[in-house]
Image (cartoon, rainbow over all chains, first blue to last red; front, top):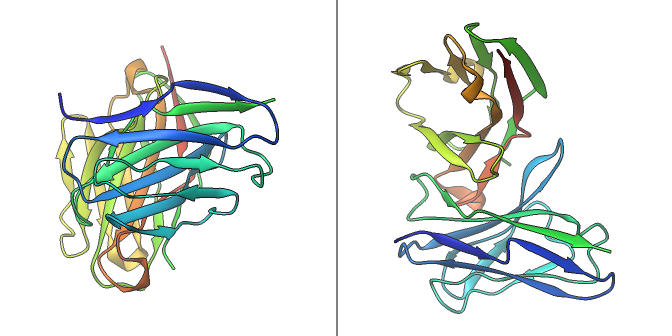
Length: 112
Length: 117
């Protein structure tokens, strides 16, 4: 089945450790996105990519990094520089700018 | 810069009431796209509707309707005869077709809708 897969669904890390969240899509979409969701804050854009080997910072990129080496994959690394990493992370993709985005099921990251 | 504001943080209604969720946006682009999504308790976002900036026709889909007004930069969503299954978080989103924000997809803060039986 076509779709977006985020793994794992739940992730626990110790403070100070980097952690990478996986996002894979088999929809052949050019654009991919990472959002962070906190209670009362809505979806805030971390990074987005319109094409392979290119990506742009979103509104809250500090403390995060991404790569886009393959069209299907857009991993997000939460670094130790991110002060409040505990959150729900959503990955999305879409074919082009005038279309809706498709979302994965999300990864809930807890840093202890 | 593009921005989406959903001023209503939470709305609570009783089943069968009509409810309107407000969305106000800001953009400098003349070509842009607006979206509404629903997020049920499971967490995955469900796409509801897309509207481009050149199409101001209102749309109705069953109990759902959308009112797009460029003059007030608003794209409001109304649920008629609400049901308990409508309880969810609803998001409005904006995407510009050009400029430095090309491809950026910005969401509002979301409105938590609770429908009581």
